[in-house]
Image (cartoon, rainbow, N blue to C red; front, side, top):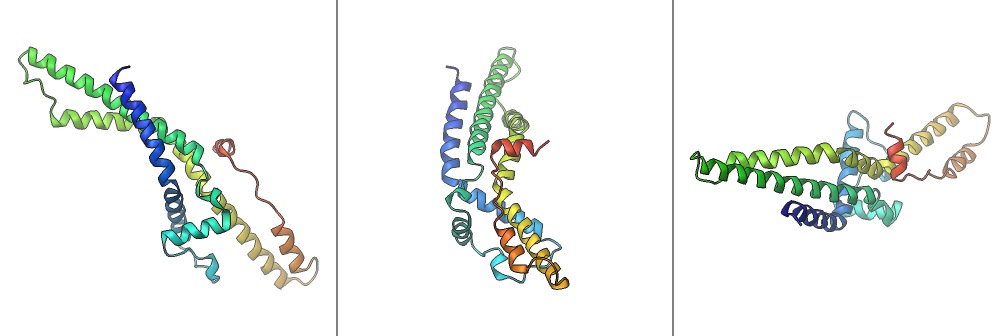
Length: 204
């Protein structure tokens, strides 16, 4: 087995282990970022239960309470695939370009153009090329992961907006179904399943 393939497999394996351990923190971090973006230019809700919690641990506990343990690991499957692909691709191409740079340095030494060592600029170029290929090949995977991490959060915001609209309409119109009936009907709506294939389909 070549050194490039061995490094690629080692990087993929290590990345998968690290991803499984840290994924709940990544989910909370992604939701915190999208929450900040969504609230820019908007008035904060007057309902304290709708406001984001202060600390990371509190947000994790709140997420478990509202969505269960599955909420912390939403999008884990494509994330694991993305991590394995990302780490594997980076270390594979890094080793490949490293071997090429060392071979060029040795060839130049034989021609009297150097001492056979790879310079700092060459190492930076090797890392930059490997990183660029990694991003180009794996970026679509991370787009899917982010969509799956934030889907439940987005659905909850849509439901909150519908609830506010129903309350507002009920205060303006006294005819038709009662407010309690309309809210009960809204609460009975179950969220649609949202897996990897749903995230892929929503991209088109």
